[in-house]
Length: 181
Ligand SMILES: O=C(O)CCC(=O)C(=O)O
Ligand SMILES: [Fe+2]
Image 1: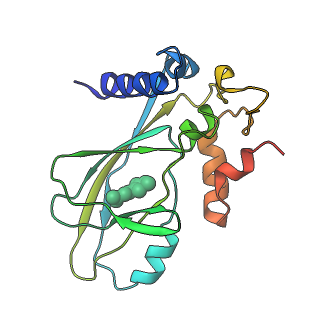
Image 2: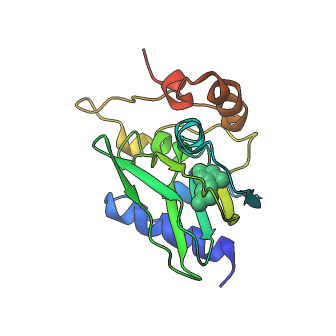
């Protein structure tokens, strides 16, 4: 199964979980899936507290597929102000919800806040695939998820990656800048 097939299946199931027509998210993407891959190589590092704090983020993508280091843990997720370690599961693909899925689902699927804790002695690698709509496509909360009781909480956006990389280094959580006021 290739990445597009896996990705599209997953967002079809996610649409069905919300009682939506199964292609609702696929159609919001406008027919193009953009996949950006990155190879993360973490050198041994003693500045554990600084890196732990500065690496906190949620991904800009809609969905991230992440292949983690086969031996070394390091990834942690935040829930209710507590941090939880992602286990080392060789060859497993971790799936994260990113900001663009939070926007399209009108806040129902929350983007996962995570961070990486460096190891003082060993190198670590990871390979994320950031999947989302093409950047020229405007996306927003799906119409079927906007009601009188639950109005749109996010604005429609284009090129969210640009917004993300403008705000992320400043410490402002990028998704908060596209909230309805
Ligand atoms: O290295 C990891 O396990 C996570 C990397 C990550 O969160 C990212 O590249 O956005
Ligand atoms: Fe990430």
